[in-house]
Amino acid sequence: MLLFGPPGTGKTLMARQIGKMLNGKDPKIVNGPEVLSKFVGETEKNVRDLFADAEQDQRTLGDASELHVIIFDEIDAICKSRGSTRDGTGVHDSIVNQLLTKAEYFRLLLKPVT
Ligand SMILES: Nc1ncnc2c1ncn2[C@@H]1O[C@H](COP(=O)(O)OP(=O)(O)OP(=O)(O)O)[C@@H](O)[C@H]1O
Image 1 (tube, rainbow, N blue to C red):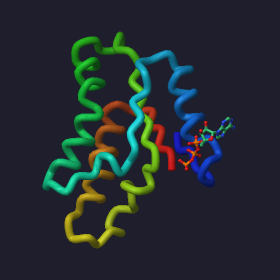
Image 2 (image 1 turned 180 degrees about the vertical axis):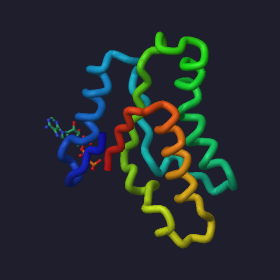
Image 3 (image 1 turned 120 degrees about the vertical axis):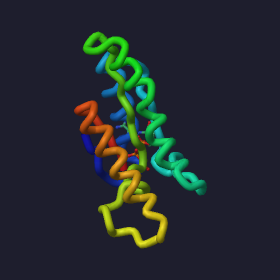
């Protein structure tokens, strides 16, 4: 689910409320730029770590696992169209790839908030 709109119009608030209504685990709320790291490979690890407990639950509990909700606030700061960022590091493309891989694995309910 993508919530898009001007600043201060309640997108984050709404994402939090929807997360609560789904009766899963407490939503994990991540500010997009928080996952960025200046160290090589660390940003990708930060993204993977976000999904680690959901993966662990899936492995051990299968369909009995509780619902995990991850809310990405300000996701536009980290998810750019692939190939559009020419900073020489490829980190932004890598984040998009990581998220798409995880989303596919979990058939995730992604809640990016910009
Ligand atoms: N419809 C609303 N009812 C009650 N409080 C609201 C509503 N909309 C916004 N607020 C309050 O306004 C503040 C800003 O809202 P919020 O952070 O959810 O906006 P946002 O759209 O995510 O903004 P940004 O794009 O800047 O992150 C919060 O304190 C929130 O509780």
